[in-house]
Image (tube, rainbow, N blue to C red; front, side, top):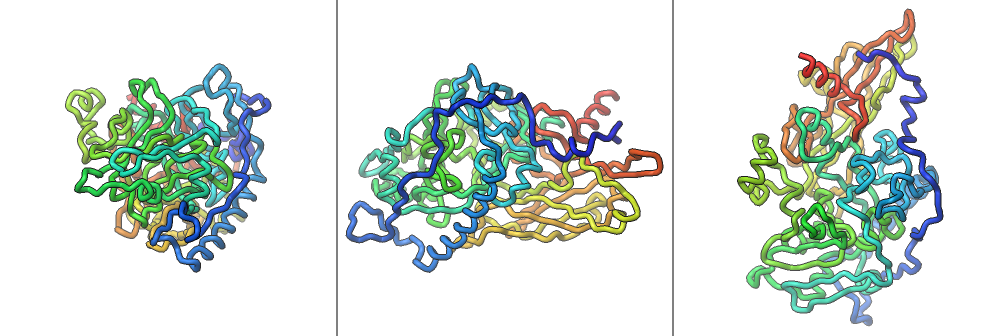
Amino acid sequence: MPGSIRNQNLINSRLERGIPPVVRTSTYTYRPIPTLSFPRNNASNPTIFLDKYLSSDEDDDEDDHQNNEYLQMIKKGNSELEPSVHDTRDEGTADNWVERNASLIRLTGKHPFNSEPPLNRLMHHGFITPVPLHYVRNHGPVPKGTWDDWTVEVTGLVKRSMKFTMDQLVNEFPCRELPVTLVCAGNRRKEQNMVKQTIGFNWGAAAVSTTLWRGVPLRALLKRCGIYSRKKGALNVCFEGADVLPGGCGSKYGTSIEKEFAMDPARDIIIAYMQNGEKLAPDHGFPARMIIPGFIGGRMVKWLKRIVVTTQESVSYYHYKDNRVLPSHVNAELANADGWWYKPEYIINELNINSVITTPSHEDILPINSWTARQPYTLKGYAYSGGGKKVTRVEVTMDGGDTWLVCRVVHPEKPTKYGKYWCWCFWSLEVEVLGLLSAKEIAVRAWDETLNTQPEKLIWNVMGMMNNCWFRVKTNVVKPHKGEIAIVFEHPNQPGNQSGGWMGKRRVLEISK
């Protein structure tokens, strides 16, 4: 039970965190691409890649209508944001030129920049996340590049190795624009670190964001260059960024996917150059990055410079030493000694099923009186799955899993023409306040169309990846004033090095014993 109840306004706002930033004039101009001419099936223009899998005009019209709805969401979200600024914490680092939102919660100190938004603020914006609030995973400094000088090379097992300028990507290929939820494989890692320290830092439950991405279908570039067949050794497609990272033995960040994924039209894989209707922001890969819907964020290489078709998987340090779920008995020493990093069965590609309770927020207070006791209380949260699988069910229990209540689930996106769902969905459930009074905790689990669901208990692994056990919120009945009672809700923890959460209290009790 909490020792005291904080001021209600302090508990519910949480929008300003960290050292106050200093505003300076930006050296980076963040603006829409000036020309957006995307020809469709123009047979008179031989440079246009014609794809037999392109949508019909009827499909295009439907997509345009929905994308216009997304653009209205984007406009509304942007109108509610304070300007991004140069943060004093970036002074003296290679990122001192990058503008960032002051409310982002920093997870790895000053540098490199890894952050997530406050969970309640992320949820406030709903389906489409404003770009300045999108979570950020950087392994090193943000590379500086210009639109006019940037090229993306396609080479390896192709008939024609080619370099494409950004203008060529925009004007010589069809575009695909669609909303995609990006999730770091470390989402909810701090829960694992509270049980036993992993080799990863403390992501909370907001390493997830959804934006509208526009770019070139990857298969269009590969076909233009004449990708070879499997019989000729073309088994993998490797991606390499521009960021040189000392932590990876001097290598650049890179990874790969199988050719079948890369060439599958149902996968909607694109080389993105726009996010929410504007050029990519520096933290999100300007001017070009991979978007692989339904996969973990670690496969979506930012600041993309090279695409290499190979027989072997990527040789990047990060392809093997990151984004793996090893068995629970394997620690870092054993993983290095016995070569666990190189066992293919432990690589992560597609996301797993996951869900989180977002309302009530951590330390929200629900006063109990004659009026509130008669009112329903609405629980809310998000859920997602991987590989384009639809989340079909979300359930809440308030008695430790003995009984489950089925929630209302809303999917703001329409399925693709291949029946894929690339975005998170939102769930809600009205419960009786008296039921909350008698509950010790609230827990949620989701199901997808293949009947994957979340495990009851946390499954620890050395990288702290893919944590998707039931998300539990504790309910604590307190007496803030004489003759009054209230419920204070506690999430498992708070992201980064912030204190708070029921897991921390449990850990203190275990240590004291």
